[in-house]
Image (cartoon, rainbow, N blue to C red):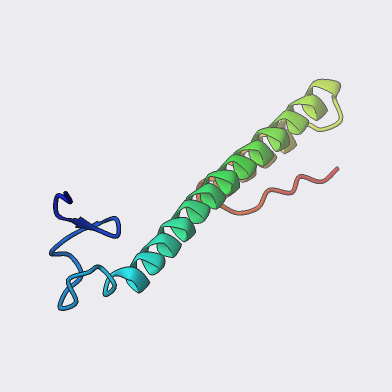
Length: 97
């Protein structure tokens, strides 16, 4: 005895057809949209992690150069402020020698 289920879908779902075949194509579209959403979220998390890593690396390099005496205090402060302003704006960080 079946209890209101046909082909894995409850009876009553599926619009006019009643057997679930109306929902079949839409289920694939929803699955695809969900997969795209998951990939997008993963991409954004990776991008944020990579940007943060780049900023930390740039500040670390700057700290080392200042500690070794390769750059003056004025240059250190200017470059550090530049890195922080780029961090806020979301720009790519590129600290040269």
